[in-house]
Image (cartoon, rainbow, N blue to C red; front, side):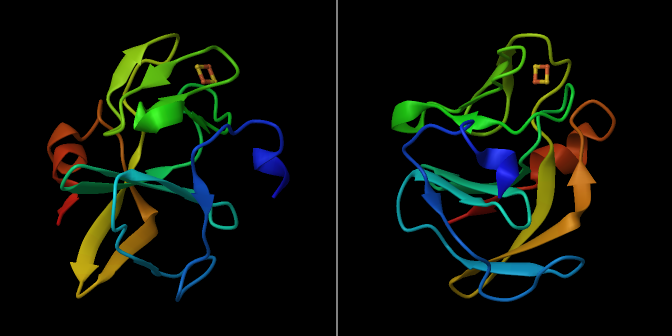
Length: 136
Ligand code: FES
């Protein structure tokens, strides 16, 4: 998808949802190890860091630029104004004023279920943002 062209550096892998699509709940294999996967079609970032798995909106919470992956699972950076985020989406520095937006996630066996329509912003709903994680 054009949104990612030239904006993402590795390591990451591109994935497609096993089920779902625009306007539907999405299902992905639970990541087996630390790393980042990007579903460009649905603009979803999946990130496993230790025992925690998150789904994020691909766009930067500042001005919606597609985020890129920093090497060695160190998190994410926005190419527009250089905001940086930890692998769990926590804001480190830059022009953004909140953490990366998390999507609602749940576990269904060995699948991660993501609802891309339910977005939690850390500044307006900190409790739900904090709870938007699956532990494996
Ligand atoms: S658009 Fe990402 S920091 Fe401005």
